[in-house]
Amino acid sequence: MPNLDYAQWAVAGLYGLALIWAGVSDIRARKIPNWAVIAIVLLYIPWVFVGPGVSWTSGLMAFGIALAGTFALYLMKVVGAGDSKLFTATALFAGLKLLGAFALATALIGGAIALGFMLVNPKRVLRGLTRKGREELNKGRGIPYGVPIALAGLLVMFAPFGASHNPSVAKLPPAGQLLPAR
Image (cartoon, rainbow, N blue to C red):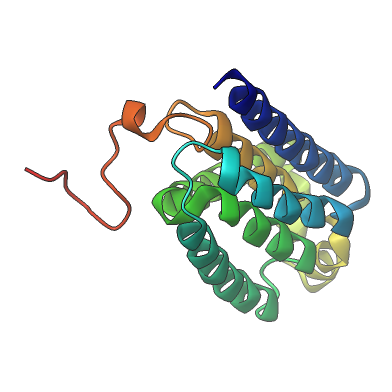
């Protein structure tokens, strides 16, 4: 159905725009707007109907797992509240099948950005080892983790194995199955 393809790409495009805006906002103000997170959550509703092979139960389970994990990280002050909300909302689109890839991509992209920060300003890294330096990092001058979350969310949606592609093309095993059926 051609109209379904347009609807699929419209939802995917709006999802991408919301993620890009969240990442840009995190860079500029170290704050992820709630409306961007709410938009991603609301976009999941039409995605259930137009996305290829979408399982709403898988999305909701991924949402729950992400919420529990990122809330724990928030309580330990590892991530901010906006990062937690953005990761959790984006996990809806990843579903259980791509949640691990989404988390891994977020961590790897975040690590690459952190390494880039260290290479560009090694004195700042050394200052982070002092009490005053840690206080500066805690005041929002650290790495804007909304950026790796947004980039990983785009990867999960638009990569050849991502949510916007036909699951039969990706040749991935069904969710919860580690090895392909024989």
